[in-house]
Each structure stands twice: as C-alpha cells, then as structure tokens.
Image 1: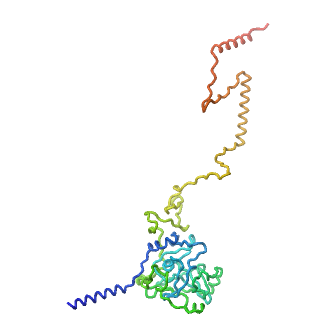
Image 2 (image 1 turned 120 degrees about the horizontal axis):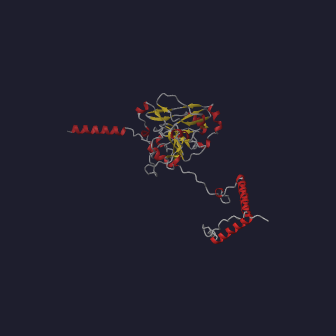
Image 3 (image 1 turned 180 degrees about the vertical axis):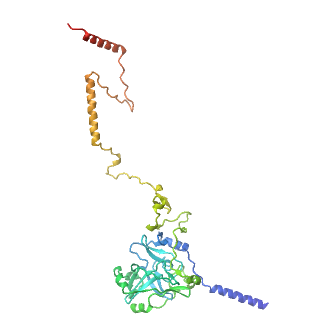
Length: 396
C-alpha cells in the first residue's frame, strides 16, 4: 500500500514538472492587434498587403524608426520605441512604404527584438525594416531594402537615447550606402528569434564606452503586457523547420473585428484604401463610392449635387429673364408694323378695330359691349339701299 502511494506521488510530481517546464508562448492574433492598435491609428487596405495599420502620428516625412533607441540585450539589438503603442508593431510584423498610403504596419505573429536589417561601416550605421515577405529558418533569397528605406547615424550615435536628433540628412544616403555593407543577422537561437546586428565591439569603439548586455526581461516596452518572459517569445520548433515569416498579411476580404467603442453589429469602421485596390468600373458598369459607414454603394445612390444660393451681392442668374436675341427683336418689330397697317385699313373702311377687353377684378375680363338694337340696324340697312338706288338712276 505504501509503495502504491509513493508511486502515485512520483507520477504526479513528474507530470507537474513537465507542465511547468513547458514554455508559455504568447499567443497573439489579428483580433489582439486590432483592439490594441485601433485607438492609436486607423486601418487601411493596401493593394499588395491587404489590411494594414497606420498610426495617427503619421504625416509626410515621418519614419517609423525616428522615435526610439537601441539596446544591446541578450537577444541582440532591440529597438525600444518612444510610443506607448510601440510594444506591438516594432516586435511583431514589419513596416513598409505603401505608394498610395505611406508608411504602414503589416501584421505578423512571430516576436523579434527588431525586424530590421543593418548596414555598417567604419563611420556609419543604418537600418531599415525587413520586407513583408522576409523569412528566417529556410534557405531563400534575401531581398535587400532599397536605399531610400534606410536611416543612417554616425557610429558613435548609434546608442543615443533618441536617434531622431542624430539622423543624417537623406541627401547623404547614396554616399553612405557605398561606404557600408549589409548585415543580416536575424536567426533562431533556442527557439527564440534574435537579431545580432552590428558587432558590439565596433559600436563600443565608436561611442567610446563599454556596453553591457541587458537581459530582455529587464527591457520595457518590447512586448505586450507588464511582464516579459523569455518563454513567451518561444516559437514552435515544428513551424520553425518550415520557416518563419516576419509578416503574414491579412486579406481585405476578411471582416474586421469589433473594436472597443464600435460595438454596433454589422458596422465596420471606415478604412482608407490604396488607389490600386479600388473597384474596377469595367467590372461593375459604373464607378462605386464608399459610404460614411465603410460600405460601397453605386453612384446611382450617391447624393446629387444641389446648386447653392448666390452669395451676398451676387446676381442670381437662375431668376433673371433671358435677354431677347436679335432675331426675336426683328420679328417683334415686324409684327408691330403689320398690326398698325391692319388697324389703319380698318379705320379707312369705317370699321375701327376693337380694343382688348379691360380686366375687371383678378382674372375676370370686362363684359363685351351689347349689340345694337334690331330696329336701328334695319333703319341703317334701308338707308344703304336707297343710296344704291340713287346711284343707279340715270343723270339728266
């Protein structure tokens, strides 16, 4: 009996040790990214990478790696952003410059101390975000970022507390590119992604001070949540065998999650679109526009333009009578002359023209004059007959 109890205790302890020893990986999802980043920016649709995020601080000339600094950790060179939201987009996914939107973040689900590649030389150090198609753990061709993506500082300023104040002018990029070489040291060590980057000894020699290696657990704003554990950054070894991608784009066809403050069902927040992914009028037969709730409607349902009233002091052309043309003026004159001729002929024959009835009251014409009495008409007729008979009698 005692042997059975002892065996049960040993088995229980073994199972507990296995459970506790298993690394607790940090599970992130698009819903998690959406709820955490929506208050700090807006979501857009990129023609090439689907749903992407752009921070509200973005403006022309902004670069995602202006505001922050580098820390030498036991997992390599780690970027620490100055932004409150920087723990997510600088360690999951990567940044890219969309031609229609600007700098945007493409979601990814693998943590890294920094998703950048470096260029180093005796006097300069630069870095640029990896492309969204960048992978580690597999033998694939590496695509170097274009020179315009790189930020350069003097080697002695690489570990400055805020690199924005040390960034070299863009006009010198071409010269610096020729004096530096690419350094891509992003690898997987003990199931965790590391970025060794520039040689620490070169940075120490340029800065004139010794750099200590800081445990990643002691670095703030490098992962979501108040506490950072190395086990949370571990990747699945089975997935690592097939390669780990820096970013995994989300299709624009995927419905957006419901963000805090927008709980009404069936309503998506409005998103910007890269011009290249707008609906093709050839497929729909007419252009389509986006309503204020983010849904597309045909232009037939779009509000029509209504003419605005004239400004103060401006003549309202809509209410002014049209000016008569030269042809209409000539025709009116001709009609007036013809009317005068008819009236003159009528007076010569003894039949003056009748005047138009005067208006009596609103819309009621004056009653026509009464006809002559029958006796008077007969008398006038007899007189006319006698005058004719006299004309027929022979003259003496």
